[in-house]
Image 1 (tube, one colour):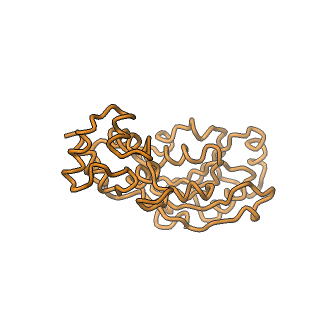
Image 2 (cartoon, rainbow, N blue to C red):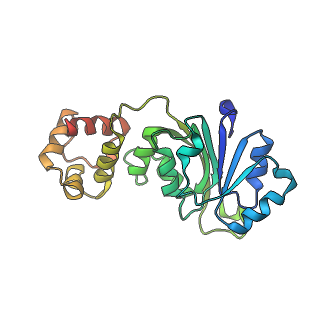
Image 3 (cartoon, rainbow, N blue to C red):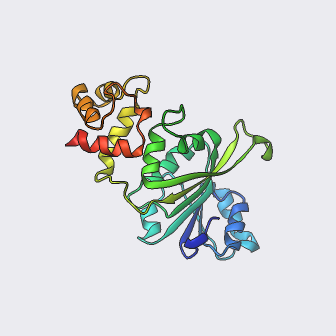
Length: 238
């Protein structure tokens, strides 16, 4: 599942821990680099006889130079992401100019609920739209808290993200990101009012762009799917 058609790609494991996933990736023939922030574990891991050939790097995944690692080539990310940084880390990886070909990660279930949410549902938001603009997302499976020791306070899910071949029609991803985040900043308000309050965008400007798409000017952001957000952004900036 992790390597598949990209088996020649470089694989970056985030959070090697005690090496359980590291061993499994190595057994699949991965060209593997493993990040670990804990210096004690970084010292212990190379002593394992079954981890020969793995490059183990002591690094904070939020500060790591992913561009230098990828080097313009194919790369894959795998890991059991720490719950306290999993959401911003996954968002950073998935929305890069050149994201990984694939990300396979374990996260808390509610984050994966947001990644896979459909429009007009409570979990649907800016994370859904922005990650979905770069990646095709699917939930692989869910693990209850009883599968872990000690058991955490939340359930976990494994999510698979595959880089989109197309650009989703977005010509300026930074501007798109700003508008999507602004649209969801006050999700109990209409999209137009949220953009007015978050970004200072005149309400009539948003309403005009919505009417051009045959959408109700009083619509909330959660009712726009990815394609609608792309076209709304284009018309708003025209």
